[in-house]
Image (cartoon, rainbow, N blue to C red):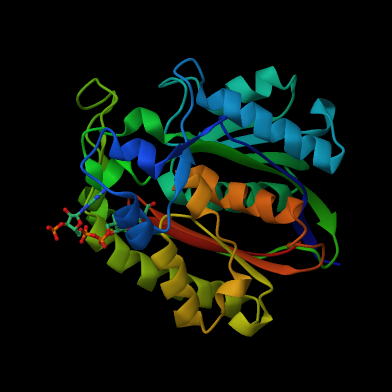
Length: 319
Ligand code: UT7
C-alpha cells in the first residue's frame, strides 16, 4: 500500500461583512459593471485594522482540526503560506503554533504568493512521506488589503482578506496526494510584485501588477502544469471530478477549463464573493465546496495556482 498524504479536514475564516463593488465606486474611478465583466468579482472581505494574518490563520486551522477530529497534541508540522505575515519574523506559523497550543514538531512560512498553498501542501506532503512528520496543518492566510495601493483602481478592486486550512495526514491507501508539480520563473518578477521590503526600502510596500501580461502567462502555465500532474498520475482531465483553482479572475478560470476541455460545472468558483485572497484562495475554495457537499470523499480534485515570482503549480488529490 502506498503511503500518501490525505486531507482529513478543511477549514476557513473570513472577516465579517462584505465590501461590495458599489462600496469601491465611492472611493475609486471604477464601476460595478467593469469589475464584474473583467473579473467576476462582486464583493470581498476586508479585515478590521486590529486583525492580524495569524488571527485568520488560527480560526481556519481550528475549523480544519475540528473537521478532522484532532487536537493540538496530534499536529507535528505547521506551515503557513502567506505574503502578508504578521511581522518580518518570527514566522507567522510559529505564532499560529503557539496559539493553537502545539508544542512539538516544526513550524515555518512559505512565501510563494498566490501559489503559496500549492507550494506548502507539496512541501508538507514530502515531509509526511519521509516519515519525519505524521500530521500537518497547512494554512493559506492573507491580509492583502494591507499591501494594496487604495488609489490604484487597477489592483485595489481585485483582492481580499481570508484564510483556509487543511489537516494533512500520512496514511496507507489509495486516498491522498497523487502527484504535485511546482514551477517558478523569476525573470517575470517585475510583472507582479510589492515595491518594498525589509531588505530594500525598509517599508512594507504596495502591490504592483501588469495585469494583462500576468493574465496571458496564467492561462498557459496553469493548463500546462495541470497536464503535467495528470500525466504523472496516468490520468486525464476527464477523470477529474473538481478543479479547485486559485481565484484570481473568473475569465482565467473559464479559459483554463476550456483549454482542458472541462465544463465550468466542474470548477469550484468563489472569486465572486472572496475576490483574490492570494495564498488563502485555494484552501478557502476547497473548504467552501467540501462544506456545501460538492466535494465528497473519494473524488479526484485538482488544486492549481499561479502568482508573483512567477510561481505556479498543481496538486492532484484523491479526497
Ligand atoms: O493572483 C495572481 C495572479 N493575478 C492575476 O491572475 C491577475 C491577472 N490579470 C487580470 O485578471 C486582468 O488583467 C485584470 C482584471 C487585472 C485587468 O483586466 P483586463 O481585461 O486585462 O484590463 P486591462 O488591464 O487591459 O485594462 C482595460 C481598461 C484600461 O483602460 P484603457 O487603457 O483601455 O483606457 C484600464 O485603465 O480598463 C481600465 N481599468 C479599469 N476601469 C474601471 C483598469 N482597472 C479598472 C477599474 N475600473 N478598476
